[in-house]
Image (cartoon, rainbow, N blue to C red; front, side, top):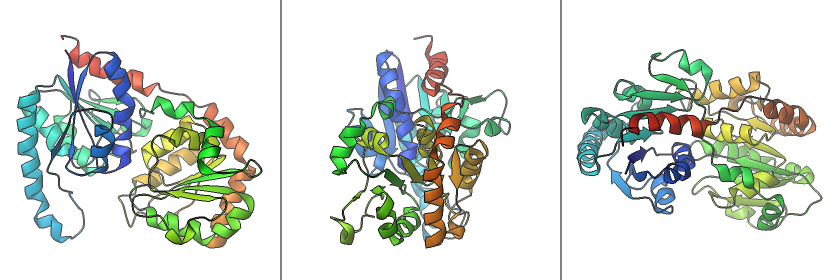
Length: 356
């Protein structure tokens, strides 16, 4: 039997593309194992699917001063030792990495054990974790055409990002019933994201009374970021994280306000949902979300508002303008090329396991 190790973690965006690949890999008869961090979001999501899960030590490599910079290198070394031991124990034919710092020791260990590793880069420019993995990778799957041009030609492939097929099968009325909404007002969905969600959440809540005059609001806040004082507000529901009902909530949403993480925006594009992107500020990140958002804006898929520009008045105006012009964004996304990412990535995986 062909055996694949999937890895990726730290945020939902480093897990959901792996989850999107799992049904196809199972159809093809792969034995699947997953390596992630001890207690990251990936552990719960993967274990719920019944996939064998192995936790290893992981440390973040920061570009800024933090006391953890003195201890995390030792955690990375421990993670590498654990990953190497797992490679020898599991003996996979191939490794597929979606990114996040937990993947660095896994991909490097695979390289040391002569196991081909395929890595996926969702953003326009590779993050630090994937940069550290480039030399150990056999192939690099890219989400943006701009990325392919910056990477080794014998490794880089434009594949897009795998989207969970169930997202396309949402039921609008089931979503309405789940939220307890009526049918007389349009629905806006806000996706705060798991990292850097506080700013989006706070700005939306500041204008919530004005928003509720026009919309019903679904607010995906991120872990620990719900506001108890707003529980029971008519026309407003908030959730930390939604998995099973997410397709129905997307089907219900008329417009979406989101951070500009690559996986989130690819799902929004695939579903052709008119959207306002608020990328994570360059002060709080390496600026990848700004590049992602501007690429989507240039293609006519999104409106973009940078965090520093936000006032209560300007944010409300952008949301209302998006809703008024929603059809032009639906048309642009519906007419764009679709890459069949799952087919392409599975084909690359198969090229390394054809001997089995």
